[in-house]
Image (cartoon, rainbow, N blue to C red; front, side, top):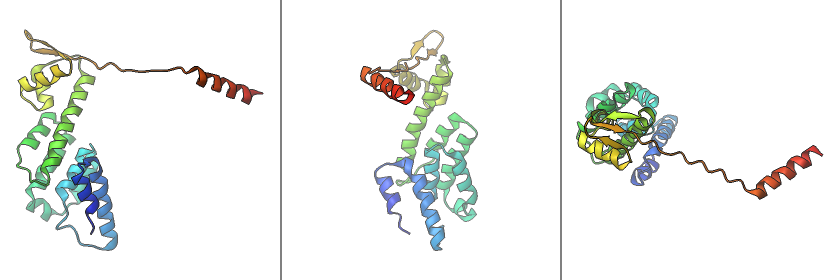
Length: 197
């Protein structure tokens, strides 16, 4: 089985493409009758789905994975632990699952990239859900200690009330530019006029 598309995606750090490439390679291998399960990069495949926030596909991949693979590869189980934490919305647990395993050199870059992406997703969630939040809760969601989390959100423009240890969320201004180009309006008017007459 030619895994060069997967190798190219990994080399170029196009982690968002890994899941689709792996899914297609599995289908191709099954269609050609190739036995691939023993050497298949299940950890990378699972991480591809998790990276894309497609927990359902990760779950189904885990379910159809041979039991022998699950027992023989602790890294695959560690990746699935991340998926389980995402499935149950255990936000702090995701960060713990990432930190508690010693990842192989092949998987480490994907995990590191996912950790950064997940931190950004959590920040966006906090931004949308809260107007004020405690430093402890922000650290919990961002997977950092309180000082690091506070510094991170302060860099994003949030405001800290030192007395109550509360952060005031600074909502990002949504910039909507509507440029009314007179020539476009004129063309639209002429077009409508032409249709009516």
